[in-house]
Image (cartoon, rainbow, N blue to C red; front, side):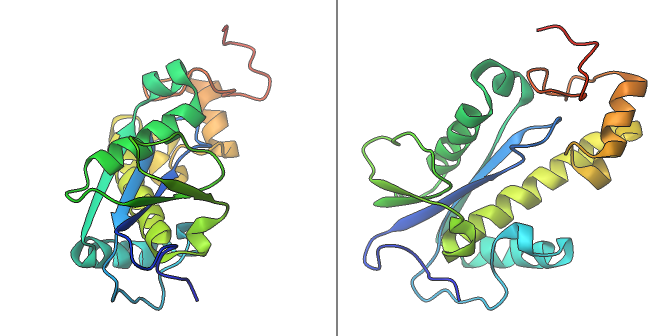
Length: 199
């Protein structure tokens, strides 16, 4: 059973990101503040849930949360500042969007940079431990998936609708065959042999 949050008496947000390991598309982060009476039996780490369950949970989280924010950090920025910094920047941007200022930030993972002067704690596998981080993981994943499905229409040969930009065999074969697009992260190793990209 997931706990609601780390500090019972503080206005605390959970934050997480999706898409760090992808070859194409943005890294997407979300921040969520849940009410103290929030309960949900199926909410957990987005990676443990089917797409159907994530789709079901998204409007529940959006409706029941005190507030939430979602931010995409695009490929050019990822290439410029690296994926770790882009993930943290995305979390900061998603916290910026919250209509209430949190007293405390619970971060999924082990790396974060201070946000203003708000105290924070990094929690490894936090999306499987705390409901607000799990909620952020669901929003980050569903918003990012929607973005990838949209750009799939522009470049259907990469099948982003299915692989969401992750380095599947099919995605890499398409890169080998068709080359790269404006949505690919040029700082990433797009092909195992990386023969056609110079850095």
